[in-house]
Amino acid sequence: MEQNYDVNQRPTKGVHFFAPHHIVQEDRVKQEFSIKDLENLSGVKAHTIRAWEQRYALLNPNRSSTNIRTYGGEDLKKLLNVALLLERGLKISKIAGLSPKQLGQMVAEGPSVSDEG
Image 1 (cartoon, rainbow, N blue to C red):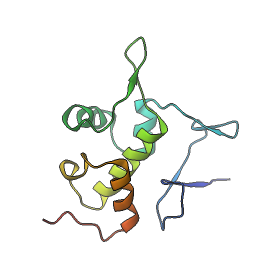
Image 2 (cartoon, rainbow, N blue to C red):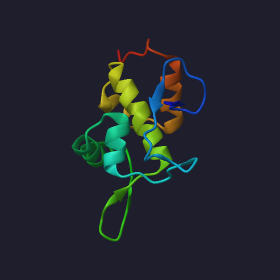
Image 3 (cartoon, rainbow, N blue to C red):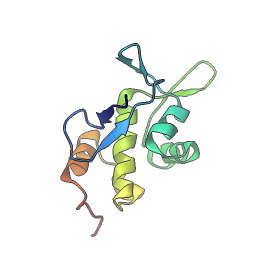
Image 4 (cartoon, helix red, strand yellow):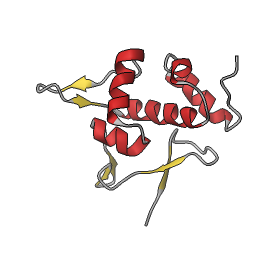
């Protein structure tokens, strides 16, 4: 049976994503994500995530001893919020510097968000 998981873990009208079986394991939520996981969950391509890391310092992944990027739950949450705001028409240059709290507030404001001004 499919379950929806809220992006912000609180009721938000229409903002849900499906957690694939490899993310929820043995009744526990995965704590570490690969760039491929982020791509699959957010719809943002891996090369775009890497570019945003360089240009805007959007995410700051940990690196393994072999230099593989790993991301935490907060990184995933931030990327999901950014992806939603981009879908609403905001520009990455306008939202990349916002704090996770500010991003969450903008997401909670709903679909009337615009990037005028």
